[in-house]
Length: 128
Image (cartoon, rainbow, N blue to C red):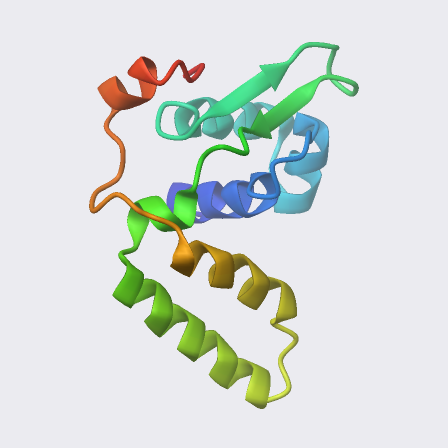
């Protein structure tokens, strides 16, 4: 599996901003524990992912809630287009209720035109 796909799967798990063990992530993505650790470490340079101490099966990783991934990568018009596309999937029988809920509030938030740079993340006090 390509690195970008693995990292996308990992982000899709962490986006709920809940604590996840690395073992859990590795199992869901079907990769080894060490591969999961390596990819999470790489992702933490771009996203505010924190480590929670506690050992292999009780500690974990978590994405900070204050980070608006969607609103930092898409402008308002792009968000509205995504929302309309997702609503079309709903009409074809797909269960996209949670995705619509995630996109809808984000379309009303303010956004940055470009993703935050590493220096901006450090200034915000994120543990990267």
